[in-house]
Length: 368
Ligand code: SAH
Image (cartoon, rainbow, N blue to C red; front, side):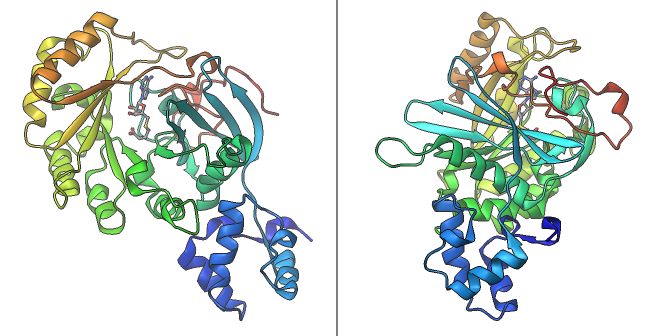
């Protein structure tokens, strides 16, 4: 039988899977059983699902499958950061990164093959955009990584946090991202707390409001500049949704809960956005928004005109923010030896847009 004709159950969150079983003439609770097998035990073989009747297992074998993206490359950096290159179709592959830290492990997940936003300092943007990932391709990254990482000696899962900070703009693939998040949070899925799942956006202000309606994961916003003139240059999306509009949406996102804050990401670019004046401007800007700031030392990639700010400039910037009582963390650069750091993920994408000539080939040149 042609496998492409089969229904991939990784595409279904709990609600959709219940509907699927009802359509098969089965009881909806089969959805919970199957979810547990798939996500808690990492099973992709229907025969292993011992509490599912034999007849139903046979039906599922005929018409369904559990198919995650195929691993093309699996690399581990000296600091323990691990990156998978995953094939999603004949023309596209994406990257997923695991970052182990003391007491937690974070998986950085991609939401699109490429990215349409073209932020001037980001390698993903330079290769252009091809398509949104399906639910199966998004949640499949977690499934693949969980299988590969096994459990720790206490029997616990190693991935404790998920950040939607890989390739792509998650809020431009809204429905699929929301379904994948619902599997991450589902007690029959990965059962992660909503505080341990973070969605990062370049600033799709109206979609932040939509996200608030359907989910309550942690929100991170790639701000990178304290005024519109500079942000227009770094994040072209700012011309559509300028800072005031973006921050208003951020405020609404956390308004219902006093302890919630938005994380603002700020990439430190030498001589561009890293002066004390910029820091003071940022303090003024964030005064009214419950915030944390994450300073990200710029990670270079071939062909970029930017340089990373010096350690002194980053520290001086951080000190000004801290003095103003803004909780500020400098993100440690992880996995840069294998091009797995923020902004370095490129995978391999067939650009259907206008920027194909600027495609930067993957350094490892592994595919095909
Ligand atoms: N599109 C979303 C999700 C990607 S998150 C967003 O923009 O938030 C990836 C994070 O890494 C973003 O904060 C992005 O601005 C940052 N980044 C991109 N290129 C980078 C680079 N070269 N060095 C450091 N950080 C970078």
